[in-house]
Image (tube, rainbow, N blue to C red; front, side, top):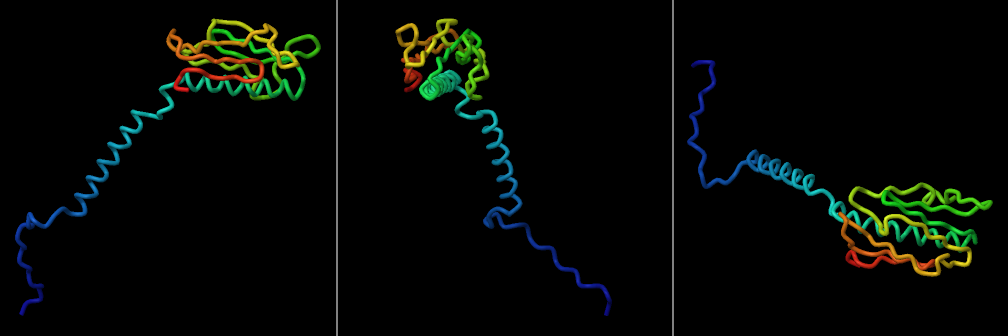
Length: 165
């Protein structure tokens, strides 16, 4: 007898009715994952598309916060806007100074192709919650030069009209 192990006979080809192997399943799952990741990255977040609505909502929230600060402090507040952005200031020692609340202190720059109209202006809210002009402030929300909504501020409440509201 010899010391070599017996040779096993080669098995026949895989039966086509046997199904798929684990390796094939893993390869397909990896490809599906890569494709899903590529699609998700190319589509991005849904909020990216409507910059005008986000900016208008932010302005409404800031105007309402500024009105709350006037109620609490009794100090007049001024809202200034230009084609590039807007900011808030308060009256102290007969001069306008940056707002003391951090959220309102820094001027806000608008994204490209976004504006509030008219192109620039100023609105002062007095300590008794009245706009100095006597009329509600109406700012058109502009995207790519077209009006898509309007922010209205009466001295107490800011509201957004249009843009799916």
